[in-house]
Image 1 (spheres, rainbow, N blue to C red):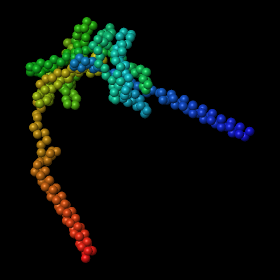
Image 2: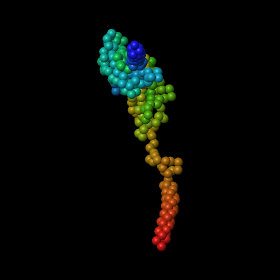
Image 3: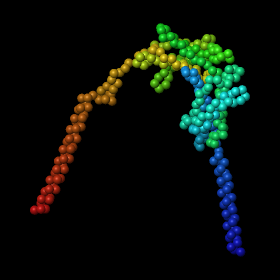
Image 4: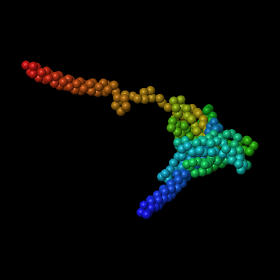
Amino acid sequence: MKMNRITGMRSIVITLVCFFCSNATSQEKPSSKEKSEATIDLSYNKKEDMSRTVIATVTAKNAEGKFVPANNARINFYAANGKKEELLESVNTDNKGQSVIELKKDLPLDENNSFTIISKIENDSLIDNAEEQIHYKDANLVLNINSSDTDRMVTAIVTEIGKDKKELPVKDAVVKFYVQRLFGIMPVLEDNAITTDEKGEASFAFPKNVPGDTAGVVVLVARIEDNDQFGNVENRATESWGTILAVNKNPFPRALWEPNAPIPLVLTVSILFIGVWSIYLFIFYQLRKIKEDKQLNIVSEQNH
């Protein structure tokens, strides 16, 4: 009877342990399948070579609840075609959380001659579904520069593509002007934002104090930035209107205040350095010789 009670107690304990273990496992499984919240930011750029790109930047929440760039997230890019969506390309994000596609020329357009690009995260194992879209018209930005013009006038012409495929001037578009530098661009004027007139033109006189390269060449950059209708549009032109950069024949002269010291100073310090170490070596040599002589004297005394 006593053995039966012990066996029964053991069965109850084993049952309870199995129940709690299975319950804990069932509670852990959903957490392993939880997905991170994600956001998509889209930007559209048209460059001087007429290529058009869309950049999707994806961020997702980490374990600390902060949004960080999402690496290797699959982004599907679609073009809206009426009520349908036409898949353009699927691209994984890089370590900056970005994926880039180049748009084809014949995108579907709506009644306002605008195109719509939609980016989606769909059925990702680690990230929640997310979606973002942009809606823009196609615009052209042309730079007109007359090299022989003594006034050095620069004119940017902004046009949009009409329904009949003809270019129409765009009024009240803000164009910003820059010059290319080694590590980026800088405004060519203190107030570098100029608004287009009814002809779609924005003009200014190029300053005479802008540094160029060794030949006086400067790269002028004109941009439409974050426009509600056209996104980002850019064009560039090269002209010899900059001040000539003086070339220093010896960029690293020998002087006390330069990284390269004068040769007389180098020789003096070297002689002093060699002299001091010569004394040290002579002293070490004499000490070694005294030690050897002492050992010889001891040996000779032992022999006698």
